[in-house]
Image (tube, rainbow, N blue to C red; front, side, top):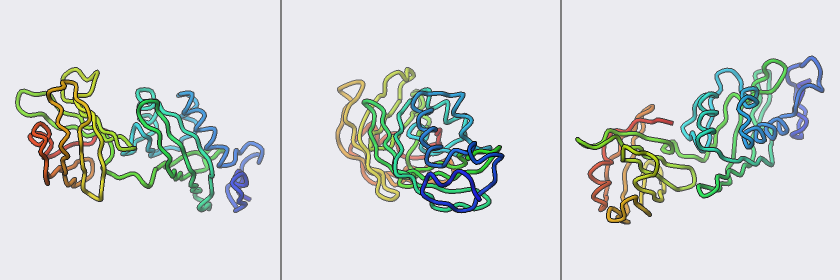
Length: 241
């Protein structure tokens, strides 16, 4: 019989371990992962990931590997609370679970999301092979673009939950603009709410159609009365994370 599944209320067959007592049930395994994430136990986190894992997080919405997950968690920490884990399937190749999660980073976001995890059984334990938030748009993430002549490059961070940050100065300590976004299909709507230089603030809404291709995005302006953004945002961007 598959070990370590009964904690989610299911008893399908699964890989044998040297001792059933050594295999942590999937729901508890995910809780332990969340606890390691919350205390930023970087050495412990590595033991939860399968080889070649692909992972999403609020700091890395476009997904990346285990090393990048740990690195972005260090720079943009967040807390994760997991509940209601259910098994979607389990077979000789692995398992998949769906959970409700609460993600929190003070002054940045508080989110209630669905989390889906694919697991592989490696070295006698369940390990995370894929972790994704299925409701998140592929437009989310960190995008970079060359600035106009004489200006530094720009960085647009579309953070899960509706906030965006624009960095367009050589000093990236503080964002040049903050604002709120909404996404409808391939349409991205942007409204600035603050600016590092108050006289540059313009609260007119801009609308862009975003055409994705791999790690690239083409922003096509539909309408934007914000002159600063209108002069700079249209064109090609490259995904950073």
